Structure formats: structure tokens, C-alpha cells
Length: 263
Ligand SMILES: NC(=O)c1ccc[n+]([C@@H]2O[C@H](COP(=O)([O-])OP(=O)(O)OC[C@H]3O[C@@H](n4cnc5c(N)ncnc54)[C@H](OP(=O)(O)O)[C@@H]3O)[C@@H](O)[C@H]2O)c1
Image (cartoon, rainbow, N blue to C red):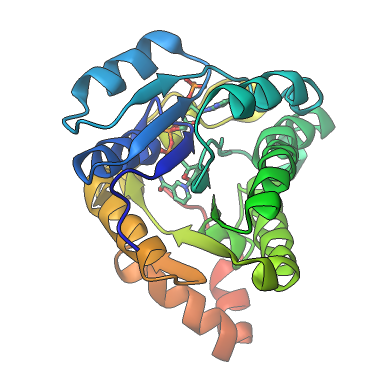
């Protein structure tokens, strides 16, 4: 399916993978709805887009999932129907369970799980009535195995992956497609924005991120995978191997993760 003239709604579009997706879809002639909290950054992304499709900036705080219904319904009334929703906004973690608290678990789940579920539910109604659409969520390789210092993050990414897998089977007969994206290390500000001990920003570009795949390459693989109707996409460098190892040699992976500290 060509995306020229289609409407793509990207959350977390102000930075990293979301920004790269916006540029990529714009270059392919799609109309864009860009959401995140920072309007100036969203405007900068819109300004950098080269395509001739329409671009609408619609700021949203997706962690405030109880407050989404009004603004999302207004957007659905006002703008063309959504062909592709990409739930990309997310926040990561850089601290151990013993050095954090329930408030941090909650903050991560609010955005990475409940924000995604709330957005998807609201847009799904329109897709079901049109019998057309594509739902996408950016999970992670952390959605395929649990790793130290990422407890709530891994839990949130497992949860959205499972929720989306369940959804796929429910809506297939209404011509709605569902794709779960599982990136490994992508060079974005994810580690800088991650929550560290006490809930403060980690504020550091981790080595794995710095050496990771660039966001534009990641976005290209995502866009082509969605277009090809892939149900799951595993993206990254050699860290992708851990997903296969976990599946076929789970004990070896467990052993490797004992005392493991990612950098
Ligand atoms: N980079 C990686 O290595 C990697 C690997 C696997 C999965 N992922 C996933 O990829 C997605 C994108 O992350 P990224 O790497 O591009 O990181 P990023 O550069 O930190 O981007 C995160 C995006 O989420 C938005 N966001 C954060 N809190 C929000 C909120 N409450 N409401 C609305 N938007 C919010 C941010 O915008 P505002 O601050 O303007 O709101 C920003 O646009 C995330 O779901 C992440 O978990 C990343």
C-alpha cells in the first residue's frame, strides 16, 4: 500500500524515532498529525519535513490517558480519517527496583502502556467504522525479555506487545492491520530522557545508544515493514540475536543477565 495521500498520526513525533518517521512519511507524500508535549519541537519537525502533504501539530500529554478522550475526539472530527496510527511516544528507565519506587513504575506504565491503550481505543472506533486502518506500536527488544535496570520499562513493553497481539486477532476481519515494532539500540535521546534513581532524568547518552542504529534507518525499516503488512519487526544490530537466544536458549540468557549492568 502506497502512503501517498494517506493520513499518518505519529505520537512522540518531537524527537528520535518519531521525528525520523515524520520526515520519512512526509517524503513519501503522506499527511501527518504530529503529537507530543513540546510544541516548539513539533513545529521544528514539521518545518524539516520536505513533502507536500498537510501537517497538523496536535500536542498531547499521553501519560494523562484519562484526559485524552476530548482532544482525540476533536482531532478525529476535524481532520481526515486516520489510515495509520503509530504509538511511538515512550520513556525508558535506568535504575534498579531497589533504588526506585512504585511512583516510577506507575509513571512508566501511564505513558508506555495506558497511554498507548487509551489512544488505540479512541482511534480504533473510527477504523472499525471505516473497516480500514493500521495500528502500530513501538515496543522494544525489552518487550521480548526482561533485563536489569529496566524493570518497569520491560514490563510496559511486554504489556503493549501482548495487548497489540490480542488486538490483531480481534480486528483482522474488519481489515485493520496491527504491527508491533521491537527496536534494539537506536541512537536517540531515549537514555537522556530515561528515569533514573529517584525518578530524575538519567541525563546521559549511554554507550549502547550512541553506537546504535541511526533513527532514519530505523524509521525506513518501520515504514517499509508497515507497508509490507509485517505483524512484528525486530530492528537493530547484533543485539537482535538476544531475542532468538531467549527463545531457543532461555537458560543461557538468564545466566548472562545475572548481575548484568547495561551501559
Ligand atoms: N531509542 C531506542 O534505543 C529504543 C529502543 C527500543 C524502543 N524504543 C522506543 O521508541 C519510542 C521512541 O523513543 P526514542 O528512542 O525516539 O526516544 P526520545 O527521543 O526520548 O523520544 C521520546 C518521544 O516521546 C515523547 N513523549 C515523552 N513523554 C510524553 C508524554 N507524556 N506525552 C506525549 N509524548 C511524550 C517525547 O516528546 P515530548 O517530550 O515533546 O513530549 C518524544 O517525542 C519509545 O516508545 C521507546 O521506548 C526506543
